[in-house]
Length: 277
Ligand SMILES: NC(=O)c1ccc[n+]([C@@H]2O[C@H](COP(=O)([O-])OP(=O)(O)OC[C@H]3O[C@@H](n4cnc5c(N)ncnc54)[C@H](OP(=O)(O)O)[C@@H]3O)[C@@H](O)[C@H]2O)c1
Image (tube, rainbow, N blue to C red):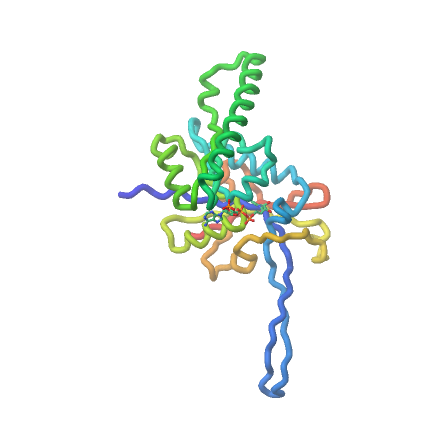
C-alpha cells in the first residue's frame, strides 16, 4: 500500500476587506440599463511587502509555536514560502529558527549563495546562545541533539520543494510537519495544484479584525494590496471546503484552540481551520 501523503497545512492570517463590485444589468421590460451591486469580502494578507497590521503578539507567538513544534522529538517542521515572504522576515531572524525554511524562487542559482550565508550566520548565533545557556544551566548535549534543526533550502517550484524535503529529511525520518506560510503567489500555487490532488489540504487561519470593524462599522479595515486566493464566500460548501471544529484545529496544531475571539489592543483575533479532501 502506498504511504499516506503528508497533509499540507497552509497557515495564514487574514483580514476581511469588503470590496464593492458593481455589475451592469439590463432590464428587458424597460430595455433600459441599470446596475446591481454586491459587496464580497476579500481576505487581505499583505501591504507593501509586509503585514497589513502592526505587530500582533498573540498571532506571532501562535505562528512561532505551531510551526516550530515538531510532532515527535528528533524531527523538524518545514515552512514553505515564496521568496518575497522570506525577504519580509527581518534579516537577523532569517532563516527562522528550529524550522527548515524552503524558499521558492525562479532564480534558484542566484538566491542559493545568499541563503547559504544567512543559514551559516544564523546557525553560528544560535549555537553560541545555546552553549552559553548550557554552561549556565549545566545542560546536557543529548537534549540539544533532539532539538529541531535550523536550515534553509532553495527550490524552483512547489513540487521540487516537496520532493527535496522528502529526499533530504523525510527519508531519514527527520521531517516533521509541512506548513505553507505564504505569500499569495505560493498559497495560490498550492491551492491550484492540490485540487483533486493526492491528499487533503488544511488551512489554519487567524482572522484579524479592527475592533471598529467587529463592532459593525465596516469602514474600519486595514489597507491591503495582497489577498488570499480564496475569498470568504468560497469557504462555503460549493468549493469543497469544510470549516473544522476547534477540537480538530487543536489536534492539527498541538495546542488548545478554542475558536473564541481574543482581544489585543485595537484588534481582535480568532484561530479557525478549514479542510478540503
Ligand atoms: N498574512 C499572512 O499570513 C502572510 C503570510 C505570508 C506573506 N504575507 C504577505 O504577503 C506578501 C508577499 O506575498 P506575494 O504573493 O507578493 O509573494 P510570495 O508568494 O511570498 O513570493 C513571490 C515570489 O515567489 C516566487 N515564485 C512565485 N511563484 C513561483 C513559481 N511558480 N515558480 C518559482 N518561483 C515562484 C517568485 O520569486 P522570485 O521573484 O525570486 O523569482 C515570486 O516573486 C507580503 O506583503 C507578505 O507580508 C502575509
